[in-house]
Length: 188
Image (cartoon, rainbow, N blue to C red; front, side, top):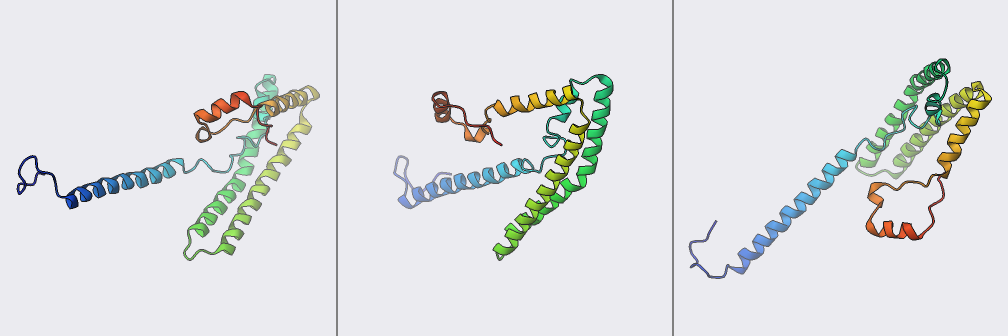
């Protein structure tokens, strides 16, 4: 909109100029906040507990790819049964995480309640992990010696691979530093 009270070519009022800059800054801040909220919402769900069989099978599913057909079918059937048996534990972890998130968002903030909720999440995750380990050990016990050796080789190779950085952690500086420094030790 143009101001008809000023002749063409006249400088605008300093108050109007400041108001215009304030509106632009406000718009930029609003867009920044909307972007942060949208990014958080899009990232929601990436930090879920591992699904049974996705990492919790300790490479057993990968091992089935190199087994003979009859053995492959047998092992995959057992692993699917493990997933079904572990599913209630996964749900317990998810429920505990939601409860912890509720404690985090609660007003007034209650530190003790949040600590207890986080401890509950950790306990549910330990239970899930222990159940997965128990199932894995049972399967490892049923493997033939050559099959266990193949699985052990997979573990060795995996432990020698450098840990990949998340996309957010990478930048040009890190890429330059990585070339001149040794790779980080594998995570336990």
